Length: 363
View (cartoon, rainbow, N blue to C red):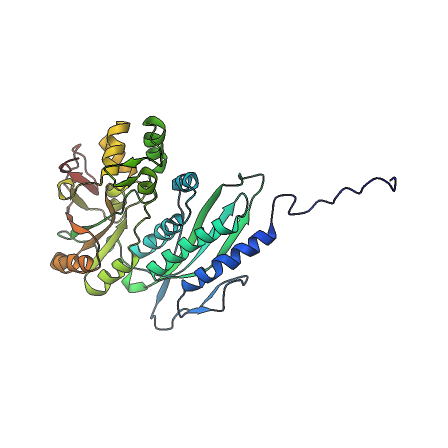
């Protein structure tokens, strides 16, 4: 090599697109937020190779419950609006409210954030939302991973997932085996679309109807983007309160597949749940999607929660108490239906484990 020729810089991780210093800065920003989402059983602090959690010795025969989930294409709305503080709440809700269905108390959660490029402030927003969700759920944020994927994801892109761990006594597991004829189904109102159906919602509202996320929508009293980013309601503590004071047979978290399909998952053979649409009116966002996209009712009901985020199946003698508990906790709730012996038919005249009858008022 000619001594006069400048030496070409060697390759580096930063030049390849991975900025370790930016990652360290992100940890500095979100560290104090994550520390607030803790429990007494947490051992050590953030930053270790593994999180440590001391399982309380008071359980006679503890079963660990685990759930993993993500947020889905709702993230596209957050990215388009450059607002990243709400999808972390959605992530926690999707995980912990699956755990509580079997009666498990959420103990801790670990997140995974994949980004095209680490922007410390954006990562801190994401983790801040996750930490706030864990506080609302009563569980600890035990750690996680932020992975930078240059060349695989665009700089502004990211995706979220998490795994949660809960615990329940072996003889206290809720499920289909506890459900009896005459049990009552109680609905807990959703805060909006939650985190399911966004591919269809975006297709209808943003592509077919050409609405803008920044447009103010009179029916919502806010912009379309704000409506679509409304965080998923976290019901974990409310469900645990019901378990503590009433005879809960089971819960059903209303996510992908809709109300009837998710409730059918916790109905035993020989019994069906009949749900009355006339007991509630879905929020305006559901009606807007149905009308502007000409979406059939069956398609709406298997795609969206339609205003019901969680359902509890309780013993008939505990209905009034269950409703009172939820109301005191500021949860919109109502009697949705009843459990009957097999032989009941759905609207097509076919046997089913859960089906809806009647029509929504003003929908």
